[in-house]
Image (cartoon, rainbow, N blue to C red; front, side):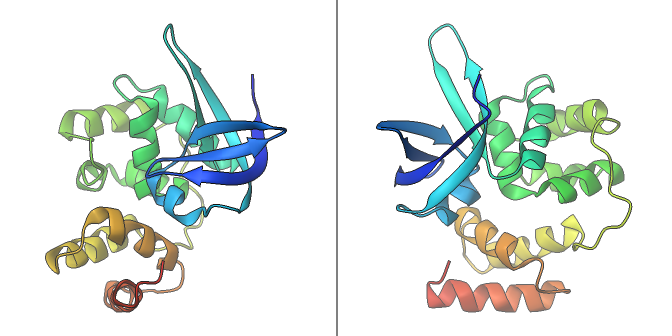
Length: 192
């Protein structure tokens, strides 16, 4: 079983990167928000979950061990597969997800593409006691990002372009208004 893959990114797509290691290229599925952040030519280390099925072997990579642990907890929930777990981690960082679960915030969970009300309730039921809520939350509340994303969607941006920018800026700004302004400036300038 693989623990991690470290090498140079030689190709990437919407939800994967190809990492060259020792003459081999490993296609590793990553959260879509991270696929855009990891550029070709960059040296990476991805913590790996290997899913073996009758007809395929797939690698799922996350940048930190904490993300990998949360990913594994997510896929332990009935009806949540690896791709959906990546979508959840693309939308919410592990600390934000803990807060959402602690508050039983179904609307924040259903803001993830592919997570309906029943899946959100199942996540709450099965994970609330497994994923510990941090003692001190220094990051903005998940509702803060959801409000900012809703504002950008109302202005015509797509979730796929807005989420990575909001996620990258969320630690720098303390209010929805300042976060939206900064995200607009970055999106209008074409920065990522």
